[in-house]
Image (cartoon, rainbow over all chains, first blue to last red; front, side):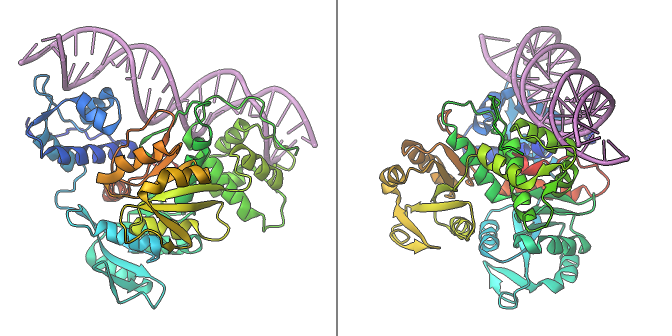
Length: 228
Length: 228
DNA sequence: GCCTGTGAAGCTATTCACAGCT
DNA sequence: AGCTGTGAATAGCTTCACAGGC
């Protein structure tokens, strides 16, 4: 019931767990509408499509405790997860590459109520800069260092063509970015302190196409929360 | 050297491995420009950012053999991977939801040389249907079953809002789709023979933001080929 | 020497199963 | 009775390390 104070944050946490916590948070937020104040691990598990034991383990990891009687208290659990992911008031990110996908990202993260917001965008194309797209200002890529420094942003979204990905990543790193969500079909070389999450859409669709073809006959194993 | 004939396809194959094979294929295709005809596991490993042992394991799994002298022959390895993923002439998919993200997907998969192509799109919005966007015809969602049946497509991309995701997925399943790449922030309920790959972009960015915040101090573990 | 192929070991992630609580 | 919290067991994935070949 009391706000969780995780004494020893485990020194190593996997992105899978962080992803699931993010998912639980979304589900819990949706639950706030319902009258019930408590939720059981098996209920969350069904919504998240994981096992009840997994839910309990994950919550154990962030040091949250429920009660056998009422399960988990939705409010305080939400508070604990927010606390752990430390996003009390939301998170800022920048975007590099204002192509079709980049624009889609802008519109996606500019939706009201989004905890994440894109506070600046960059592109090499002079035609695209100094405009406002989806209420986000677009800068020339050369201004990246000062702009990111001024805004104090630590996460970047990379939606440039493969050929420009490494260069853009280098710039992001020089500007002090610590985490990159990379949509370019290229593997980035960055210093070890920079976290990179690859999201190669072509690869994802090829995986889907592969499993779609082995219909029924072969048993499918997969399905691991989008590969984190 | 001889085209691989994998006698026993392992009965269970994980999406992680399929993803890596897809990655190797892309890298090998890029290598075709170079004069060299052979490649060693450690070279592929560096490009793919995995360990050499992993490369050898993965290739072992599809029954391909190299030679200690020359490593792997690029052409025949490509052939073997294509053979395994059975995409000799490319793969067709449909798209549901012609929003910003859907359009970005269309432009992405309509690029020349893409092995994957979107052969039809669907939307509920009457303003969007019966048009051609990025050279892809857009149909009303009611036509899904006949159109998919006629085209014989087995994979679908879902880019609708969360609230419509389950309904759209149900339609896809009724139309005979066997695999879904789901961008909607919702967990789909589908029959067990249908493969679902979730790609929740908000969650991905939250994961990136999380790890971007624990700069240097905490050690990061993650990074597993986009979570497949 | 330096490579591949692979059994065995190591590591991570998930589930089991049950004690303890209410 | 039915839940949580968690040690122990299992399953899955990756790396080690070395035999065998050129």
